[in-house]
Amino acid sequence: MINSTITIISKSAVPLKGESGKKVLLRIKHGLIESIKTLNNESSREANFDYGEFLLAPMLVDYHIHLKWPIGEAKLVRALLSSGITKCYEGGSGRVLEKPFIESDGLRVEAMRAGHGIFRKGGYGEFIGKGVSSLSEAEEVMDFLKQKGIEYLKVINSGVFDPETGGFTEGGFKRDELKAIISIAKKKGWQVFCHANGDSAIKDAVIAGADVIVHGFGVSRETMKIMRDGETALIPTLHALSALRSTNLSPDGLRNLDQLLAIHSEAVATAHEVGVRILPGSDSGPSFLPPGISFLRELEAIHNAGISYAETIGLAAGGRLREGEKASFLIIDGFSVSTVCIEGKWLEFPARKRTG
Image 1 (cartoon, rainbow, N blue to C red):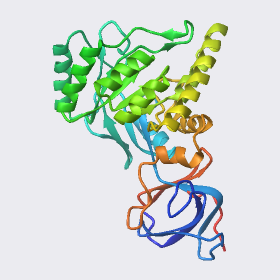
Image 2 (tube, rainbow, N blue to C red):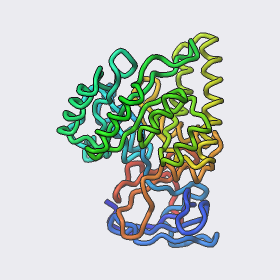
Image 3 (cartoon, rainbow, N blue to C red):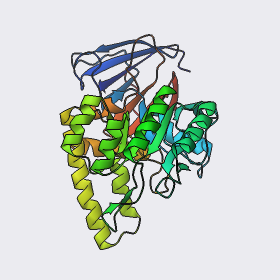
């Protein structure tokens, strides 16, 4: 715990008091943010740490992750926190977390749990959920998840992109089935995140009442407007799509992948322009998408799609830095994390020299 008073000079990654990119002075005392103020380009002799051109940012939220444990829980927690992630949305796995967090050695990451995602038997989804063949079976799964206390529901309404064919695999529900499932979920007080690819499946999910579309490959501008009007957000998983390049694809597979990447990157920029809220999610879980660093690469991909740096960090931010609150923040250089402070404790110690 930072018990003595320390001061840090950096630039703001997101607007704090005025524009982003302004030099700010952050004062921490007894583990709390005592004050944060914008400087008019002058330095301050009282600063203990001067991060120069590095940027000060709030902690981050990964809105789509699959929590697996091949590296061990301690390494998983450390990988997330060292990348600035203090909250994640667990998007379905082979088990339901008993508590809404993962922790190790006094370190904790909040986890919004979906538990077992719901998919139609015979289609995509076995890796992340429970298959159902009727509405009554879907209700049974939802009743079980309600008993487990999950925070939101994950529904799979399509297959996944297959680079070798250039299309999407089988999966998803009929429109009336999907609408009924989402209606039941809303009555249970849940938001619904819907895995959907292909414009028809995406549009069905939005009209049925999904709060968030995960992936959204193939979304049309017309459907984006429906999403905007219905306040349906998009988790684009651009980096997860790009990372498929490492999975031994054929020349045709690589061409198909690159074509979809270009289309989807443009769609993300258009969706943002139209007014659809973009939520960054890493889709971590597979071996080619390591936790933590994959989220930072997703932020970079969203920025490269045409969204400004400050807006991109803002989309990922879990809150604002405010006076009187616990000192949890990042010092970042582009999309690399230099320093992490969590509730007044250094996770990654300051890398810059003290001033004076």
